[in-house]
Image (cartoon, rainbow, N blue to C red; front, side):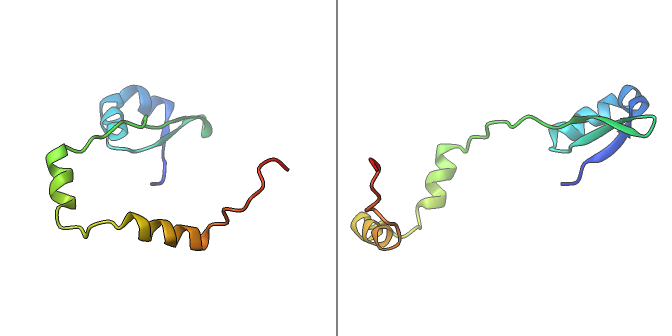
Length: 85
């Protein structure tokens, strides 16, 4: 998402809209006399999925074959790296 440029005056006068937009993920660059002076960006929030939704999502997924997964990983990852040397 591209940052919206706002003036110092807009920040002061339109703080409600700006706060709602921050909550929705919008980033702002604040300018003073047309010069960028700072950035407002939303904090990352932890978003949790309800366990019932997660279980329903994966209910129709095929079963995982752990041994086959390990073989596939071993075929593409070099496990022979010497960590001591």
